[in-house]
Amino acid sequence: MAMHSPHYAAPRRRWPWILAVLVVVVAALWTVLWNYAASKVETTIAGWRAREAKVGRVYACATQTIGGFPFRIDVTCSTPSAEFRSMQPPTAMKWKDLHVAASVFTPTRLDGELVGPMLIGPPGQLPNLSANWKQAEITVRGLPTAPERVTLTLGDTTVERVAGGGNEAVFKAKSVELNGRMVEGSAASNPVIEVALKMVGASAPTVHPAAAVPFDSDVTLLLRGLKNFAPKTWPQRFREIQAAGGRLEVTNARLQQGDVVSVANGVLGLTPRGRLDGELKMTVANIETLLKTLGLDQRMAQETAPGGQFGSAINALDRIMPGLGNMARQNAAPAVVAGIGLLGQPTELEGKRAVMMPLKFTDGTVTLGPLPVGVTPPLF
Image 1: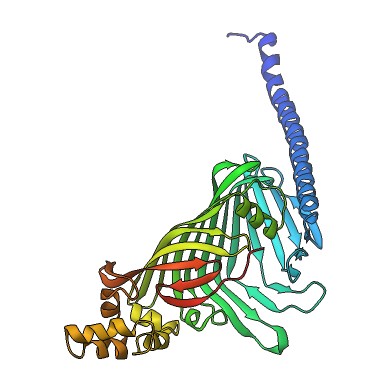
Image 2: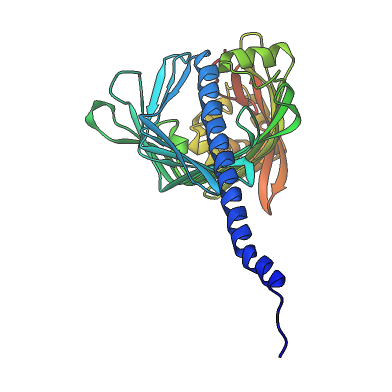
């Protein structure tokens, strides 16, 4: 019978102990590293709050906890609040909870969840607005001080005016998705930002009667002229953009409301008075409905009357075909109007008859083709 030497058995018996010691050492090191990372997160949040407070944006939590050990870092902020003291008028926000999490393996990606409702109003006073949603998620890629991409998604969102004891709908949407990413430069030097906004089933009846009917939108913008991401108020940023000759490039904008479809692209800048200036090339299908929705059909009727701005052009149609001018006056038929150059050029959009026309911003004054639409407020 073969006999096993005792000097072979002893090492085998030590292996479980060695493995157990290694596990304990690794676990201890991991715990130290996790606690170090958690403390860095807390320090980073505190530093970010301090920088934001210098420009009048104050953020706070009723309580803040950090957990998620061993593989995540979770930050929970109960009853978060924000005060924007540099805004005119100053505005305060408060909502129920904020959860932010990051995996220790991908620390440059933060996933957050906002829990409503969110109350909005003057600091220290009763709120004017209340916002709520089915879900609200935010994802940030990059460092908190130098984000590279931010995504906000909202589902079944409602904003109501609660001042005065009533609940008046201000904004509703089935879904909202907002994406921002840096496409050129860096957070410290001349960043160029792309912003994409998609909304489905959105309406804003208090903004304009035309916005009361639900619409879908898909807009992509490119913002040039920023110096950096240093904490500043938005009026300061807009002044920098104007001084640097910056611009807002509308690379794609599509809006659909019922059977009206419009697309636009172009470039807008800022005047020394802080007002929008530039031109968008806009193509609209079923423009008859749009003119009526915007209340421009009556204005068109006035302009095409015998004494109106385009009366002589309309009268010229009668010389081509008796009765054609009267048809244009009564119906403001877009095809006829486009044909004589009153609004724009006839074209086709997504298989539908359409008109291509300029949407001009002249130091804040907005015109659609020859028709005045309104005035935009100054940005600084």
